[in-house]
Length: 210
Image (cartoon, rainbow, N blue to C red; front, top):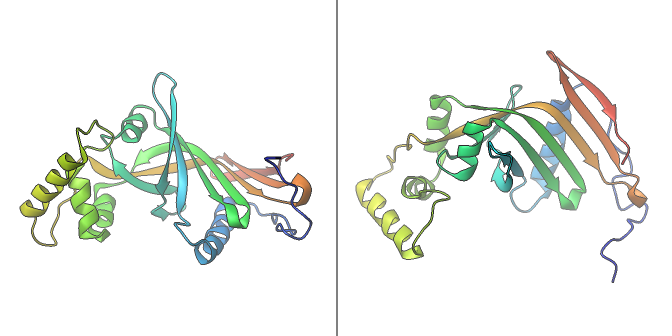
C-alpha cells in the first residue's frame, strides 16, 4: 500500500500564492480563511525550541495574538518550553491547515511580552483555565492524576470567586520573525513556496523550488 498519493488537478488551490512584498497581509488572509473553514483550533501551531546544549523539542501551542512585532503565545515559564525559551531565545513556529493544504513556517528570536499583556490575557481566560494554571507545575513529574486534582480543589478553595491572580511564572512570549515561508499544495507535487527574510525594517522575498 502506497503511503503517498498524487493530488488530481483541480483538488488543490490551483492559483498558487500571490506576489506581495511583506508577509503579514498574506498571513492575515490565510488565517482568516482557516478560522472560517477549520473545525478545530485554526490558531494551533507547532512550537519548536532548543535546549542550550542543542536538543530540540516541539509541541502544539495556540497563537493568542499577532501584530507587526510578532506572534504571541502563553505558557508556564517553569515548563520545558519556557525554560528553553529563557535560556535560548530562538524558536520556530509551523501552522499546518491540512484541509486547506497550506503551511506557514516562521523562525525568529523570542522575547517576553509585558506583564500588562500577560495580566490582560490571563484575566480573559475561563476561571477553570486560570485555576488549572495556578495548580500545575507544568512539565514536572506528577505522582498521580489524583495529586493534580487535589491541587485543583485546593486552588478553587483558595480563590472561590472570579478573581484568580496570574502566577508570576506564567506569561507570554512573542516570536519576532526573521523568516516567514508560505507553502501551498499544488497538483502533482508542483507546490508553491514563497519565502520572506527580514532585511532591516523591511523584507526580501523570493520563491523556492518545491
